[in-house]
Amino acid sequence: MKILVAVKRVIDYNVQIRVKEDNSGVVTDNVKMSTNPPDDNAIEEAVKIKEAGKATEVVAVSIGEEKAQETVRKALAVGADRGILVKADGILEPLAVSKLLHKIVEKEKPDLVFMGKQAIDDDCNQTGQMLSALLNWPQATFASKIEIKDKKLEVTREIDEGLETIEINVPAIVTCDLRLNEPRYASLPNIMKAKKKPIEQLNASDLGVDTSARIEQIKVEEPPKRKAGIKVSSVAELVQKLKNEAKVI
Amino acid sequence: MSVLLIAEHNNQELRPFTLNAVTAASQIDSDVHAVIIGHNCEKAAKVLSELPLIKKVISIEAPHYENFVAENFAPAVIKLSNDYSHIICSANTFGKNLMPRIAAALDTSQISDIIKVISADTFLRPIYAGNAFATVKSKDTKKCVTIRPTSFDPCESSGGSAPIEKSEPSEEFGHTKFIKREEIKSDRPELGTARVVISGGRGMQSGDNFKLITSIADKLNAAIGASRAAVDAGYISNDHQVGQTGKVVVPDLYIAVGISGAIQHLAGMKESKIIVAINKDGEAPIFSVADYGLEADLFEALPQFLEELNKLNTIQK
Image 1: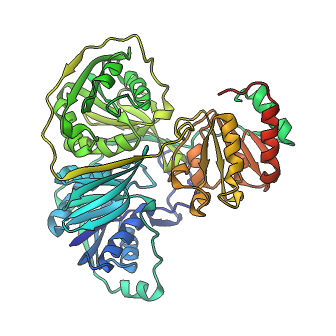
Image 2 (image 1 turned 45 degrees about the vertical axis):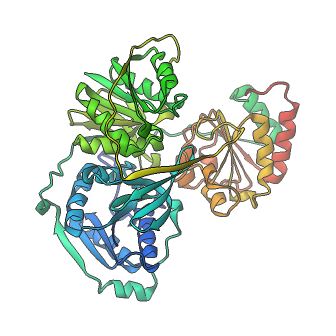
Image 3 (image 1 turned 135 degrees about the vertical axis):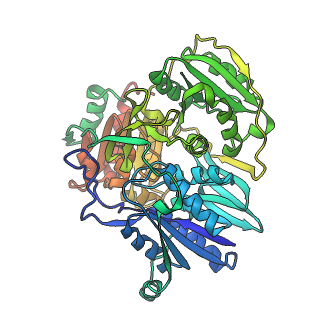
């Protein structure tokens, strides 16, 4: 079984987001970038499946600017066998990304495609579902547990009401929740080894996909600030304020 | 052209957030039709037809729709899509799972999780976990939009009588099989819809200490939340987690106890109407978003809080 894992380079989750003064987007210059957190879970799961002898190869793919190579390299350092970088400039919408991934799937013919359930930059939560629609494959979104059963997967999904379990036939798409596993850190020897693993470079423009923007981003603004509150000196004062001033209890 | 709303239900009843999605749909166009896809869901279809903002209900029933599998639902919606300019659904796990499958098949770039309708093609949506708001305009002829339910009021729920039209089911998708759903049952209000939420963080120091939170939650009829730190420390199960990677809550009253206020937690609660922070560290970032901050040891403050609540003659439920 071969697993393709899609990873995205995003602003690190610990960075305080700043909006550009001209409202054209958020500041990304000189900002720490990392792998989208649930994509780390996707890589971890694929590597664990391979270590359990149930997969033969793990291929990491990223789509984005040249620097997204670092994100692929990090996936290689935690156990992916080889990488693919699809170079593209500017912001790609999930529809365009899923079309590019569709081309990579046709070329690589994986049995499974894993990725994070959502990217923490645009918060779209679309790419995995879109790719599975384009391929007409089954989808298991928001996965918190995956069991491989021959040519089937049993997947537990995190849904609003609790947990749902489904069984899907391979080939399939799985989008990963943060609760799926605990991603490992790359060891120094593995980081060194990863430098020798191959990364194939492709240009999005060579893949015959229309990636032009369908959504115009008119402006990006700071969210409205909360007005400054007050400090209360005692529990009694707090309860009195909640009762008589805020009128919420 | 009209707007098609995908109803969320459990075959018996509508899920409450369907009403919020109807409000959002009606702000795009007044001609709102609703499709309900399920198995033996006549009762829920009837309730849907009584929402005054709905002009027509389309009901599609088949056994393979019983468990809301997106691979089965998407073709049913796509078949209807010709007559509509917009397809709308809530951005909860049901809609998040389903809508992109529809959008990709229609070659439409979906707009996720909107918090405001600016016009029929322009919407406001949070990005970076609510740390920025983007105004976006769709250039696609057909628009697939999911809405954040807590940003729209529920619509009027009675007085309407829309016609219910039956439509033919699509074929079953053979590669996905539903096995089971384990719903977390509780006597408390659901975290996502509760009027009052009280959350504990790492400052609680143990799972056992959460009983201090529980007794106040009982008194206020509140849902119980937690920070990621408290969940990671094993004090409480992860379905209580509020934040960027947990649930986003917008209650009338949010009480944060022993929570420092990491960016990722604030993203899940800072739109609450009134925020109370109880923390012994006066410099904790949680105080910057709190309407009322109490700098105190929670182990002293919580029993006092309960005592003060007990003194009140009436408490809003």
